[in-house]
Length: 197
Image 1 (cartoon, rainbow, N blue to C red):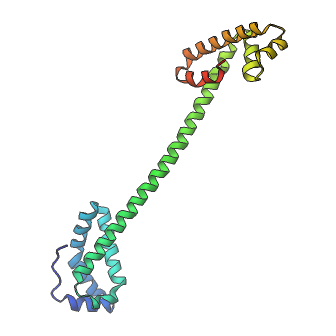
Image 2 (tube, rainbow, N blue to C red; image 1 turned 90 degrees about the horizontal axis):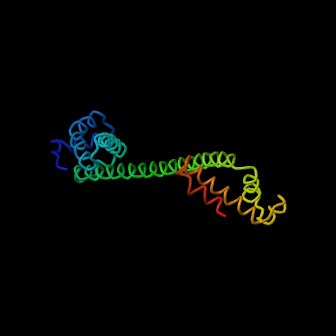
Image 3 (tube, rainbow, N blue to C red; image 1 turned 45 degrees about the vertical axis):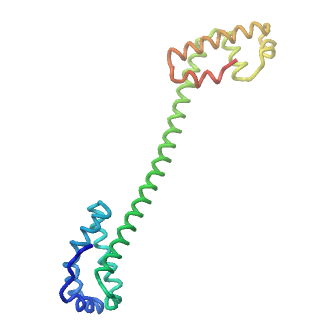
């Protein structure tokens, strides 16, 4: 950072070190434009650069006692400005990462909700498909796919042969698949996996 020092800079710094606010104002007027330009060059941000100017002068004021011991104020100032710029950029980076993590979590939550809605809609379509089955097909489907009975067990319960149960199930699944193909193409693969025979 190239900046012209004050003619009586050592005297000004000595006064600031003792708490002279007028001397501090003179220092501010001489350096604030340069600090702003230098900060903007590093951060590429007007807003960050303005904040850094305030932070730099606050740091100078809070550490004013050491001003009398400095060999060159410009080198000290240069170090403070760079330090504040990198701190500001690091903090901004962390905020961006935190926001991204939050966004991903929110997106994941939104995806879960979407999947839940998809499942409910698919379940409604399945129920409507079951309603289109004949009484025998519906009974076989309920016993075998919803209650988990084997074909032999369903056959005994219904008083028919296992082959007839198999035939009813085959027709039932064919109708259900056709219903899904007609009303919910996007859910077909998802739902058909539930009732493969």
